[in-house]
Length: 104
Image 1 (tube, rainbow, N blue to C red):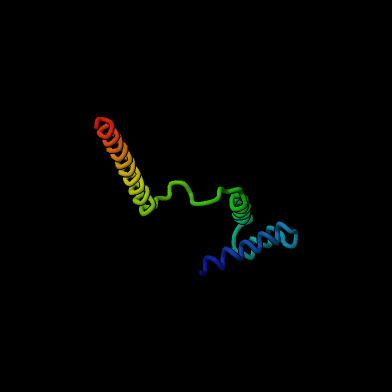
Image 2: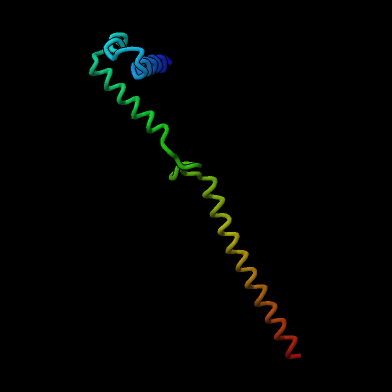
């Protein structure tokens, strides 16, 4: 929780500097760091903002493994194969019955 408060303070000061309401020197002093460190943080903050606002694909990230989904897909595959086998057996049975009726 304290890290969030520190990050918010840094963000507020960076916004104030970027908007011209505060100097980088004053912000660095308030943060208790050098101007060089302040500028590093500012750069990281701006890069983070660009990353956060970049386009993203919708949906779940690729590579996320869902064991239940995989199990269900495998079960569907097995059932589809069984259905094909049963359809083929029914067709063979019908062909055999038709051939038997024609002989009579």
